[in-house]
Length: 213
Image (cartoon, rainbow, N blue to C red):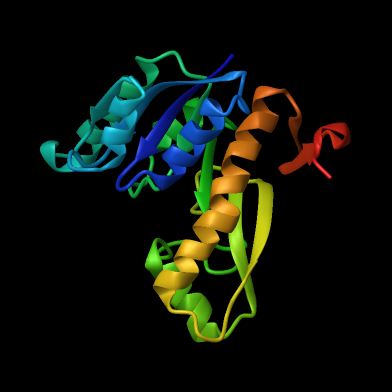
């Protein structure tokens, strides 16, 4: 069983996508051990409660120094027995000690086709605003492992989504979530739970027989 900690900051739509797949029996080897939110008002907490999943909040503002927060975050995560950390709309930068401890065991979903529109400052609607400003015809989402950089870890899965002439950042965000993020995040977790993901020379190799047609 692949035990997850899912980290959230807002609505938790990607968390809901995971819960839906689990309810449908499509992630039989996966369990969510805890949902951790950086925001005590996050709607994602209600999603956890509705599925009887333990949850907790860590607020960076409650700590006097970055070092104190980093250590508290590390202690919180390591206090749970989890195999994989899933960043599902988590808006804080993970402490370096957490990234090192969970090397190749943290994944993130980003609403663009990395390396486009990623890195520092690209999050939420800002990603889609940039895509529309550039005039791209295709965008999408990426699931990748997290390393010490920002959106620089090995790419696991990507899925493309068309950009329409009449799109606004809001409509594009919705399409990317529904057609890409909500599909490839659960799929990446399924592949990891089945031992189908391998990292060789900082690139992800997926066992071919496991890939869906």
